Image 1 (cartoon, rainbow, N blue to C red):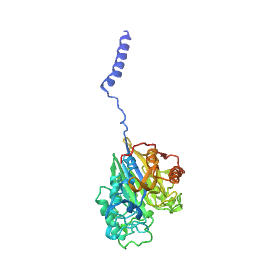
Image 2: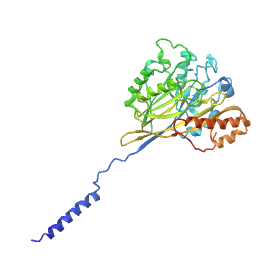
Image 3: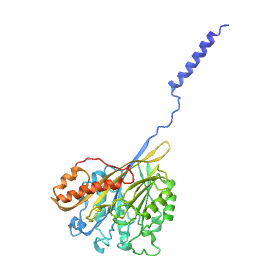
Image 4: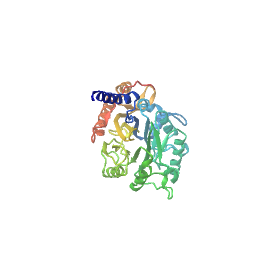
Length: 387
């Protein structure tokens, strides 16, 4: 008997088996990895010295601070979330408005920040208790009258233990905030919840409590030595312990000058921890080198759907400078970004030495932010003034 017909039949069978699954699409495939992305923007100290609210006053108790931010609001619009350190209180006009050393600002200073793009405030800092308990509670009242969020000061222990969690684009974030102190003022016994203080054991407990509930934990610290451009031993120690506890992003302020950004090995969910030791002043009346400079720090967080890994994405920044002077609109404070379009529109109201100071501040910011890590880059962005 010839074996040739059997051989032909076998080959045909193999060929048939090979092609049928392709036609019916029975080949298994790995799930497609989609990436959720969130861009967070952080600024430093939002301060309101008395001359600032005098410039912003429009009537007996009417103020407009929105023009201060008219050149930077376009940058905020590029982000999913904008937050800063609210370093004053809104205790109300009956408590008398004042600047340094015991701040109390018009309600409009807070409310106008919502209109220009802010979403969230850190309220634990050395000026949180400038007007005592009434200042803390009324500031929370004004925040609650807006769509803004906050953390760092609280109404009760229950409120303090209710960690703020925000979901953005399928990524969940927890926000924690702590200060080194409140300028020596005494918090009433039994009301320690009013202002959150730095306590490494409590910080670890807070992080452990929320770790499995969110994708990314962001911790804000008000710490460091004023006007020092590099972090001290205390800052580094607190940061290291917080990273070991599992924080994913750490943002700092208090020195009123910008300090470097560093990238550290993670012990949390993210692949690398970004630490911004101090973002300096975003708006204030501190008119000297390094303190008149601010920054918008933009941090991209990515989440992969196939394994839910959290990764630190692009990190960039926009140097800013605080202008104080008289324009065609009158006496003004204006935050100017490192953008030639905006600089050209305001430089006609500036003296030559002021223009030089502004350009120097931009260079100072770039040099100090990238001193520890080359990962942060200056954002190149153009937009016409829409104010």
